[in-house]
Amino acid sequence: MEDAAYGLKDYYKNYFNMGVAVSANSVKNKNASLILNEFNSLTAENSMKMGPIHPAENLYNWKDADSIIVFAKNNNFKVRGHNLCWHQQTPKWLFIDSVGKQVSKEVLLARLKRHIFDVVGRYKGQIYAWDVVNEAISDAPNEYLRNSEWYQICGEEYISKAFEYAHEADPDALLFYNDYNEISATKRAKIIQLIKSLKKNGVPINGVGLQGHWAVNEPSYAQLDSTLSDFSKLGLILQITELDISVYPKEHNAREKQTIDTATTFSKEKEAKQSAVYQYCFELFRKYQKSINSVTFWNVSDEHSWLDNFPVRNRKDYPLLFDTNNKRKSAYWEVAKWVK
Ligand code: GLA
Image 1 (cartoon, rainbow, N blue to C red):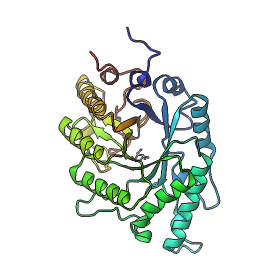
Image 2 (cartoon, rainbow, N blue to C red; image 1 turned 90 degrees about the vertical axis):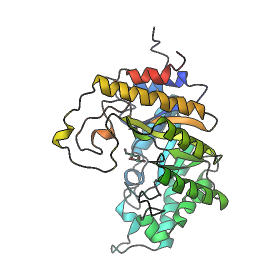
Image 3 (cartoon, rainbow, N blue to C red; image 1 turned 180 degrees about the horizontal axis):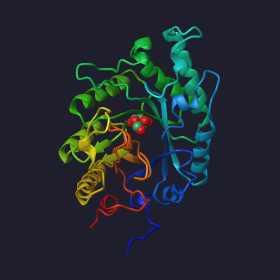
Image 4 (spheres, rainbow, N blue to C red; image 1 turned 60 degrees about the vertical axis):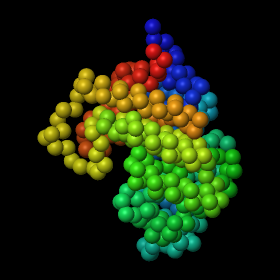
């Protein structure tokens, strides 16, 4: 018999914290009981990102982030902070002055410092780990760092500065570099190059966040094994920070829905493929349990996922362990019950 009160956090209590990305709403609505039952770690899906939390130079929206923190405190959850410096969902004011001209490196770094001090300072002692820099590596094979406004204005230095400011703001918080498509050998090599150079320069970094937005056709077992092996050699903490496994073959670029995209029910075939991938992902996470201490799913259940609109706009996806009615899927049992 399934024990309904026994959740992912219990199955994995000797392995990892089990986390989920939430909104201020999802910790209050009907998802709350599922979250309480299954997880012991939270990430704010959007509420702590720079755009939502700091939309104008002298304006902070603390409300949603605060309510996630209160839920976590009342229910003994760990909280991962996400994120302090990114090229997306970044407010416009940050990069320009009062007449719309691009700001200097000094001004931008001072703004970054103030942002980090304000946000990290507010949640000091309540957020144990921060994604300090998100997605700084370029996806273009011949380009190392992403040519973002951060990079255009500050060069590479914005990355080390962000870590230094975060460490100064909360010396006890664990600081992560977080990125996606870490399973690609080319991108992985660049992420590892960045981490090594930060370490060599004495930058306070404690871990690497592997986002894990994957799909039924990738990563293969061997690809994920070599990915985790390569990252574990860095000697830092590894966390899987944004896990979901799309039921459609991976596509990296956004596009409109087309006639070929009509098969959008969660068929037995999709279910079987997805369960198999979830099974070996967790088998490998357990293999690297010395390095990995947390796994976070990106959204609660198939009722709502960011993948419903990405990469194909308005195509329903089913990437999580709970179905559209919040019931455990077969993939759940592949993850939960590995001792058959
Ligand atoms: C990236 C970001 C997340 C989120 C996802 C899409 O992975 O790190 O915060 O925006 O994209 O939901």
